[in-house]
Image (cartoon, rainbow, N blue to C red):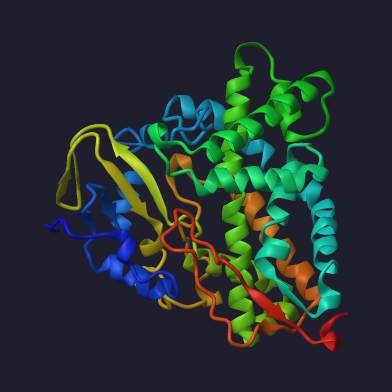
Length: 394
């Protein structure tokens, strides 16, 4: 039987400069244990898989209710069986076939962003590309004006940075930005109802009869994308470009053989999941790997540790393209597996392919040591300055 570790404090993990060290530190605390703040942590593949397979025992709805969102986040804050109603509508709208139809438009946007800085011979991948592109993709998918990008980013980043606040302690800045985004989305919904287009938001609003969505449900979907679908892709672009910048041989391999781009992406997703801890709340007393967790307990499923399980991944702490098909959990698991996983993968592939067409050779700026913002709910590099010779630009 595993023992609880009452002194465990996740914020003490040595994560900032090395997730290898950080996740080893977490994993060494045990496979099922209670942290000092009362939260239960599941770190082994067996424990996390048990939670994923039993959503009746581990509620996502109860966990996300604690965020204090002005609307219910659709569909992550909905438990079965109601959850299936939303996924039946949303999964086909974000299927690979649909994303394929947007591919060239999304590539053109990526090229334009990259071309804006290649003449400088340097860039900060986070500020110049990773922060901008996912929001443009969101606006494109939902049929909203790209001209609103910078304002949208301001709202989203402020909300995300302050998302841990309790309802009693909401800052004026958070309230102001959340209300502004809320009002913007309400206006967009009204405009789409009056003049629908060929986009995801219009298609959802066109559903009629008993299956029609309320405005609150549509807003809940939009807020979910803002809170969980923008900064995570921003983070992944940064992690991917960091891996390729520090490993020239890997970079040369994917440039020479395009079929290796997706395995590379899967390995970086495995090693650097931007949302490595997913919350659940137990609906009753439950035993996991020999440890009893009380009812109504907050439980964190540690994707960061199971993605580095040496029994599954022989090269657990490094990129190995030969193990990319072994199945990581960067997008979670079970019925709440990430709704936008296909879209996120496509965004990463587009950036990898389009960036290297224009800038095939680059390195991290001399003297800069990348590290993530820590502690943070979403793991992401704060900055990633790259330099490249003018001769490398083509």
